[in-house]
Image 1 (cartoon, rainbow, N blue to C red):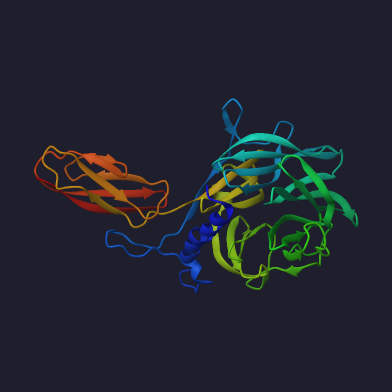
Image 2 (cartoon, helix red, strand yellow):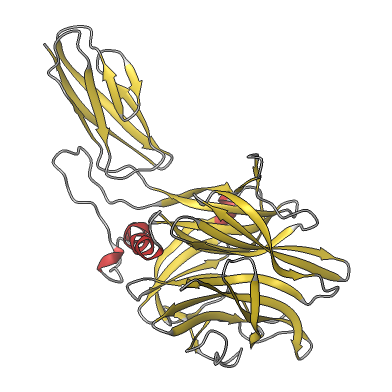
Length: 423
């Protein structure tokens, strides 16, 4: 896996850029990076604009110490995941996920730590010291952001409690750790009644935060997303309701749910939900965004046995944007699933190493510029068929044969030909 910096840069150039281009082909792009098309190639029989699509979701798997693999669900005595955060590290991914149990008269929660090599199968499930067994509704709401810098994990965690005018509200507390498991509570409350979702970025000694004011059913104010800055991680963030600056997408205020990140080139990428559709926007200042992708996908249609949405994060995995969702299924069971992009096939070409003497083996090869989960099928021109990108075949007689290969996945299909000569 690539480092975090390089991987995120590739995501922006190759991931959403192409998707934005196809959705908004009739509109002027936000900047030159918003359009990515592969150049023409004389060796390819098909050349087209390439963009990812999001069609299916995969439930996350937990591998137990004995090697058994099961669906990743809340620990016993807990029935939902409150929220999660996933951090790409140099050699693996780290997840923090809050398990919560709602009982008559109270709620309990525990923050857990997991690791993964591929972002799909997770191991080393460990309880952190962030456990709340208070027999009332003062419970932990989950780590929402982690930044790893110079050997220290900096975390921002939401906590649900009663502090403002009789409302149940969330506050954000600042925590740190050297191993991601044992945490120190540095500041119990840095913003009262600022709640999920929220995201932070850190660069050149400046912390940036995007968060929504939060209150229960008694709260009648706005929940529009606000941008704040501070020279420290745990103070000077301003008033929970009026501090900072309103974030706008094409002039309109932004409501939950959102996920925001700062890219290495200094631009900002915002993913936001309306209904059950995910959209994207981009900004140069973290405040004024331009919509760049509408209806990227409908998570209600593709999450397995979808019931109620809770939260999502977007993670770079080898240059692709993977959307991780925390939700409840129709029975109320907590689920974690990932929606991964599929790249349509593009620039398919076919070649072979003939002329081949009669009785010899001819090697045929199919090559793509892009494509994921691709199946190759061959009509070899003599009545025989084969599968795979590379095929070895013995033709029955002297002559000229036209072999046709078709490369396909669930979103696209292309065919190409190559002429085989047997002497």
